[in-house]
Length: 260
Ligand SMILES: [Fe+2]
Image (tube, rainbow, N blue to C red; front, side, top):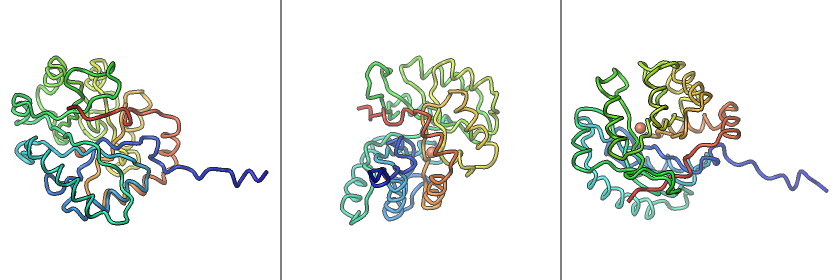
């Protein structure tokens, strides 16, 4: 009787992902959030859109954001305490780790050689490489010489690689042989949710769906930076194509934990 009374309220759009694994909400360490208050506002929207957990990934990008792993870990600890002390009545996602988004640029080798690459790992130990999963990005402007060698070297050294937002690099088109080669080498891809809603323009939007249709994409991330992105995320959460995609496609977001 009264079936409509039993019908469950539908879950928020991004609830199937459980975890966001790419965001810039540690205040004042990169081009992300500018303050504790801004981070709190953004996190509230992320919770409303369905994220239960967030994993912070500040930029490590020498010389623009020359962050140091130890400093970032310390700031993260303080930030968690400040969020707890200031969240008031807000419902927020849990913060479960800090790693980084490492740009393959001039300073990258120093991070590698000084053991500063912060990684996640899969909760399932069978899936894990020895040194964990490293989130990397490339320059958005031009293809760096030898980036394929860097990726290969990292894999040889025991890292699994997640390439952030492959759809955003103008020099990779939908049929890029280098991206194909990365997939053959076992590189994971993470598409930005906002690309799926056209936030970065038509080309990124088209490529994001194409890569997912190719079966190339294991992770989705918000790449959340500030309140403007939070508004865009709210907009994306009403996009019927995204809602449908999340209903029929499994992503690995929820299977990540922090590598110690
Ligand atoms: Fe990012």
